[in-house]
Image 1 (cartoon, rainbow, N blue to C red):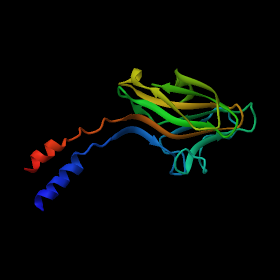
Image 2 (cartoon, rainbow, N blue to C red):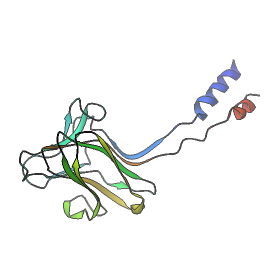
Image 3 (spheres, rainbow, N blue to C red):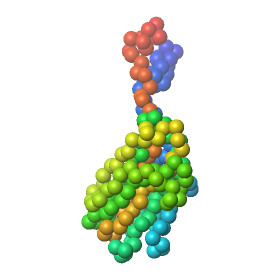
Image 4 (tube, rainbow, N blue to C red):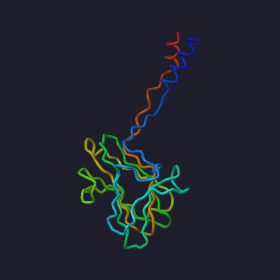
Length: 187
């Protein structure tokens, strides 16, 4: 019995397991934009990014949403907390429009979290549709720097939704232990 318990412990602790090493892993399930995030209503229309509960969230029940009722409005920023970027890190999130299409930019700052700091344009998305799409950006060129990442919404129709925001990388699986090695340890 003692040998079986040892074998079981070895198998459980030596089995492959992917370990996530995400500096940011946010699905807005707390029901609000989390502390450390920055929301900027740059157009001054009084409408800004909020956590929003709806059955159409990409995962869970909550997502971040921003809306406007006029095509003249819609310059709103959702900015991550500062992250220390390592080689291999990515910025990934899911986005969609409420209906029709929406336009947005993905930006990066190495100096601060105000609009004028976002010198690096990672992408301009025009016509994002009403189905969830994953967007992913390689941050390796910024390795060794502290960065802020932003989604800047520029209204096209009505509302942009963001969910499952991650910054960092998924670590490699723990080295798999072979059955031969386990058997040798058991003997």
